[in-house]
Length: 212
Image (cartoon, rainbow, N blue to C red; front, side, top):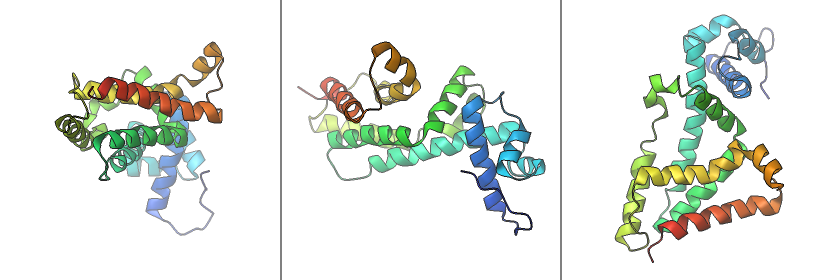
């Protein structure tokens, strides 16, 4: 819930900027870039239109800031999942589990990403550095190489494609949640199926990656 500023409250720039960003994430994830007006963002944030242009420069500026914010949340989760001293295969298991947990807790990330892909990446293609996967990609690559060197993994054909495969194993449960649930007649949110999806994803990943 976004708390609106009370009349006469002392000005707090960071709090105002935060309210605008949270409002933008909520609205853009629900309607996409073209479905949201700046007036809607300031109304939900309880501030004035001038603040959007002061902090973010434009409607596109606050949209990009919303994308960066949700991508940053994921980046922190991914890096944290690979930080411990566990063996390489356990680190990948942690990564899978962390991705499922993140997607459970951040439905706005899923919707924002779907909207941006419908727009063919029009906004992030102009600023690819804002959603760069480094330094996570460097750490992920090092873990795979470590696993290969220890004889735990066989060398994948391509490490970037391997990461895409891992993302896909998790993301499909959220991007296609409703169509899968209806067409396959499965309750994806049931406790059993929520546990099973991680087991199944782990099974598929390691059957393909582990050295025989």
